[in-house]
Length: 111
Image (cartoon, rainbow, N blue to C red):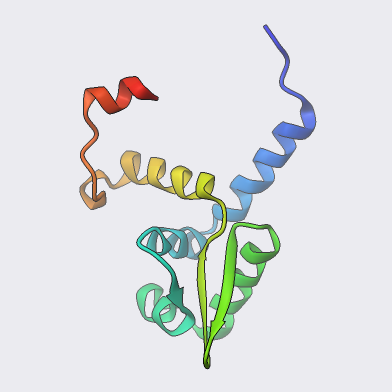
């Protein structure tokens, strides 16, 4: 059996820590449906602007989110499709009733 390099384990652990906060995970869940501006994320999460901004900045610095300024608004989206897949996997486990998809046996076999 091949050993997994310690630096890869460390990177994975950092990535999981980056999304493990409830607000950051909530933001990612909302962004699965597409990009959202800060005002929409505030409304969706119930967070204050300053608190949300701190978490968005952290996820942007870690490469989890991208942002784009459109007029006066800043829109955020998930930068790495692998993070979207990870959040979708968490939804399948913890809130399958919220998922927009039906997982068939064929889909499971493809993975």
